[in-house]
Image (cartoon, rainbow, N blue to C red; front, side):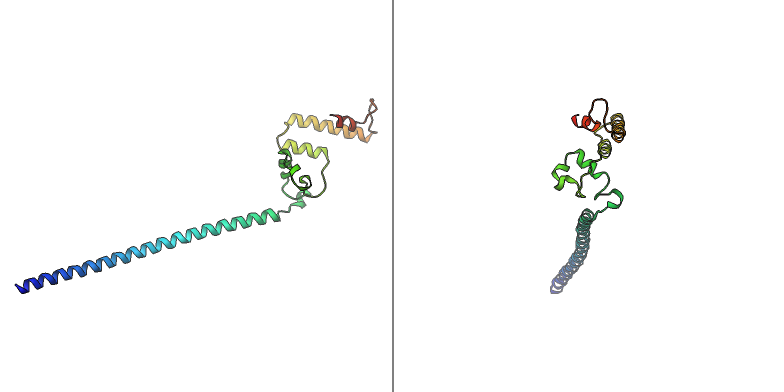
Amino acid sequence: MASSTTNTLLKALGAAVLVMVLLSVVGTIVSIVMGVVATVVSLVLSLLVLGVVAWAVLGLVSFLGDDSTAATGRRGKPWDDAVTESRGWRKHLPGGGDTTGTRRDDPADRLRERYVAGEIDEAEFERRMDRLLDRDSTDRTGGRNGTGRSSRDRNWER
């Protein structure tokens, strides 16, 4: 009877050791998988943060270093002034929003900007441009019409 009890105890002890080894192997595998998952998540988050920082730095550099004065004669993209002027933002910018420090007083340029911004349609643009061209030709030939007032005076009254 003692040997049967010993055999049973040895079998139970062997089963317990086997369970412990299996649990250790499963724990190790789970630990490795969780480590890999944590590493991948950490890498993705790090790359995401690095990408956002790089995007912000590039945006800041582009904003501060955007100098296209060679193409437009002023700082910024050619359509910037038309958009900001059409929305009324120019008056809130330092110097009236003119980035070169001088005002552009050419009525044809202002008219083109309003047309590009969509404030006036094509027919109105052409009508006003014709009026500007007529005014310029009148101003060059003496600047006075039959009323005794220059066309410039008439346009300021409108």
